[in-house]
Length: 454
Image (cartoon, rainbow, N blue to C red; front, side, top):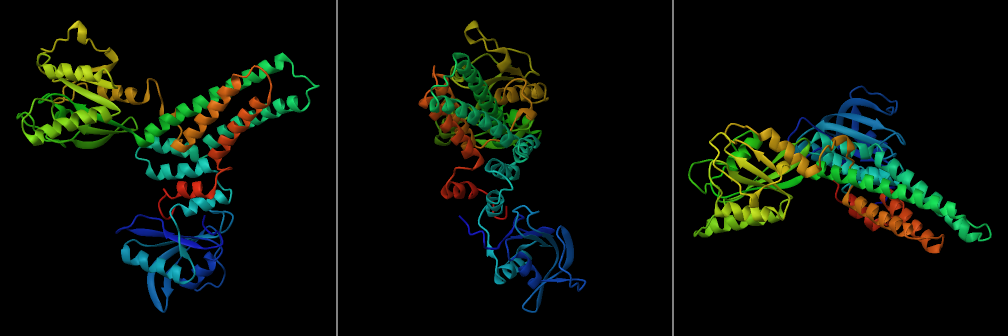
C-alpha cells in the first residue's frame, strides 16, 4: 500500500506526439511544488484559487521548460480528496519528460498504476465497486460498454448492494434476537416472513448478476469464428460484416490459409471475428495447419458462424460441420442468396429457424438480419443496453458466493445459529464488493491493472 503522506505525480495522457499532455499531482506538497516550478505570465502574488486555471511557464534551474496551463483543485474538492494540480503542457516525449522530472526534483515521486484512484477509494470519495468501474470506462470500446461502466461509477451498483446488505443485516438481527432471547419465541408466521424476504434477496442478487453478465459482454465482447468448407464465401462474409475489403477474395479455392481477425461492433457488443481457412482434405503442411486451426477456433469461439453455400448441394464436409455445430453455440449462414438455390436439407439436418440466416455476401442482402441474430445469440432476446451494469469478475464471484449463502439459509426450517452464520457470511461477501473487508494485498492487485496516471 502506498504512503498517502507522499505527493505523487504522473503523466495522465497517452505517450507520444500530441497537442497537449496532462501531468497530474496529488498530495500535501502539491501546491509547494507547483509554486516552485510555475511562473505565471502575470506576476501575481496571491495564491491560486481552487478550480481555476493559470497560464505561464514551467521554469527550473534557470531554464524555461515549457509553456503551460496549471489547474488547481483544493482538498477535499478533488478526485483524490487531496490537494491536486494538473499541468497542461505541450504533448511529446521531451516536453512531458522535462516537466515531470521537474516535479520529481522538487519533491514528488512517480505514482504507481492506479494510485490516484486508490487514494480516491482510501479517502472515501468512491467505494471499490465505483473504483473498479473507472478502469472499464478507460477501456470501453463502444458506447454501450461506456454506459454500463458509467452506471457503476455513478453508484448504481453500490446502491443496490447497499439495499441488499441492509436487508440481510435486518434479517440477521431479527434471527439473532430470537436466539439470544429464546423466551420470546419467534412465531412460525415470522419464520415464513423471513424465508419470503430471503427469497426476494436472492432474486435481487440474481438480477444484478444477470445485468452484470450483459455489462461484461458490452465491455469484453465475444469471439465469433467463421468456418466452412472451401470457397463458400467466408472471406466475402467477413468483408460484408466489416463493410470493407479486409480479407483477400478470389475464385481460387483455399485463398485464406490462416486465420484473419477483425473486430466489429454489433449493437454495442464488440465481436471479434475470426475468418478461418476452409475445411477440406489437404496434403500440404501449411493448409493442413490452417484447417487444424479452423477446427480449434470452432471449439474455442463463443459463437460459430457456420457458412454453407446455398448454390451447391450439401457436401460431406458440410455434414461434418453441421454435426459439430450441434454441440456448440452456432449460427448457420446460407451464403450466395443471389444465386439459384441448390442446397436442400433433409429432415435429419433441419436447423432451428432462429439460428439460420440467408445472406449474399456479394450484394449485402441479409447482413443486417445476421447481425441481429448474432446480437441475440451473444446477449439474449429483447435485451437492451440500459439493462446492463459493469461488474468485474471479482464482484460477480462475490455475488455468487453471497447467493450461495442465502440459498443455504433458505434450506433452514427454523431459526438457529447456522442460519445466522449464513447471513453473516453473505453480508461479508457484499462488504468485499464495496471494499470494506479487503487486505492491502488484494487492493494492490486490483489497482495494479490500472494505467499510470489514473
